[in-house]
Length: 513
Ligand code: FAD
Image (cartoon, rainbow, N blue to C red; front, top):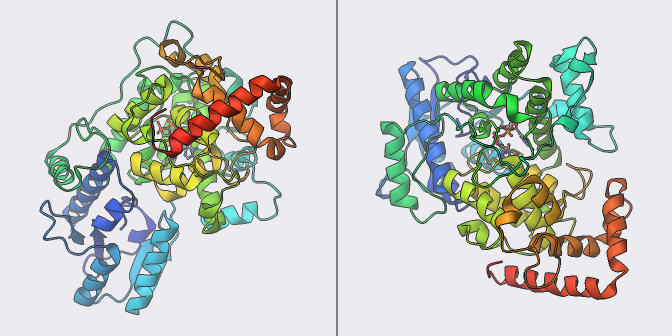
């Protein structure tokens, strides 16, 4: 069992017989340091794995579990493959059974290890997802373009979710027009806080381990309050349905200083570790709408994220890997800005998103896409570097979901496989959707000069740089037309290019922006 497969009902347990079969799990340093992980990410994985181990043992299953030791001297081995190889020699199993891993690299490593040991490896399809890997390939096979909207409607029809016979419930496939509210000038008022889970003895043991062995990793360790068991994940779901689902739709895109969660669900980590099944999440949201407890625009918007986006990006990952990770359609080269590690910056928007990442190993979708992702894309950060950073800093990051979102949706590194256009915007967008610009030392309207907003400067420079690539894109017509207008004043444009070059040089040199 891998750390992101913690589901008692998964296909890995089909036909499991306690007197014959055993479960094998291992914490190891290589996976923990493969990327320089946020401390809370390590706590989440190890704590959830240890809780799962105990649950299986309580159900009379034999579990061979390798726990990292605080002193580091009594670990079972340095990496997954060597620990597994030693146990295969010791336990002499007939074969290995594993659920489809969520990471191409891990899949290869398992296959290579089994081959080297001369042991059959049975890889079972993961029915956690609505859409299987092969099923997605079939759906995608004859299509010129993979469009989320087509896939999402196909999934709604196939699974009869929010459908009135063959028509979408309420008469429309989406209610996006109702779902773009900002908090205006007055702000959100008191937002509901998520149900916290005080660390129990097992989680505290893991917190001490992480502190002792990975204390130099980024992120804050204190304040960890995530669900680490299936039971807690179900409580989180109930809390979201009761207190935040109704507001999910309208404020899906809204940003506000200190509003770490807005009305989002904070269910991604529990979903991605398989502590909860997406069907239970979707059924609960639909039931809330049927009971009149949440409006359709919120429920449809939420269902679209899970039934649409989540399944879509997984399909794309397995359809496109291993080549996908090498893509860099915009030839971006910069490293991730220093402030993405320590949060120190004068930019109010980046500072607020980064404090969420640092404190919680989390940022909501718009902070990821339209603040941290946007700035990285406009500056020209290498999409692979952005993905590696994301894998390190977020509790919910698993390769299959992080890569298409970072490299694809956010950085347009795939040249338009996940999304049909780059998500690029100037500081005006940030100002419209948040209060950040009001408290920022930069002026979102200015593209050059001392207090020019770096996002606005880099926005024009980005369009200018990639003009030829974007000119033919029908969804970019307005932006390219505005660029042409801007270019009518060559002096302004030259100033923007100079200022952008200076920003990029500073980011490349690791200086703060
Ligand atoms: P909510 O806003 O409440 O959404 C509900 C659920 O829908 C989420 O829990 C998640 O399971 C699913 N979902 C929503 N959007 C997406 C999406 N684009 N792709 C896949 N699932 C989605 N999500 C991850 O789970 N892991 C990642 O590593 C990840 N990396 C991302 C990187 C970038 C740059 C961007 C722009 C998005 C990324 N996402 C990722 C998608 C999305 O931002 C997170 O799922 C979401 O912010 C998690 O918070 P939540 O549970 O409160 O989500």
